[in-house]
Image (cartoon, rainbow, N blue to C red):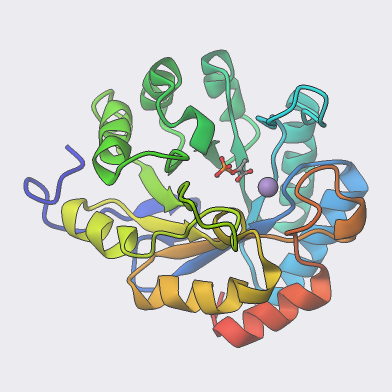
Length: 260
Ligand code: PEP
Ligand code: MN
């Protein structure tokens, strides 16, 4: 169902009035984690002023260590909703438990399935049973074929509103956090009709190359780019090293030339 062979036209995913997969690439920006109402509100105000329409923020954080900040859970989703309603933004947040998929639709506009859960088949099935758009991340070491099969799990249950996002894969290279597989973008666009985005934050883990990587993503045909931005990255409860501050973010926007 996700294959271009049977369905030639591009799928446009509607996130409220934001169309993903159309002619204009979108930008998804926001903090790694929802930490507090004030932190999200400050970020949302800056994004709104910059013309960004889609806010991200993790409430359920799948952390490598059980001792690291695990996220605010449902309270985090409530904060996102409150702030998004105030500023008229759309929201994306990760859900990790199939039992939360239906509930999430009350708070957020797009459910993200994270890299670590790309092959959590019960979660994929639950995501397929709702109408909420899904942003599916490529697994840490998933092939493009495995990635597309995971999308198929969702679409085959009836939810056609699926977006794919390349977020870097594991290689031996240590200069970046992961290796951004830029070739995945045109391949996914050829093989599938679903919108394709690129997460330049988690793929590179480096603020100094985010703008050129975002430009490369768009040049390769991506329908959107995701970045992390935080009011005070040094104090962030997750991914402190790779989140942009507001000045860096505005510079990024200018350099990439995304008319968001
Ligand atoms: C995220 O986007 O918040 C995240 C945890 O990314 P990934 O699943 O790609 O590691
Ligand atoms: Mn992060």
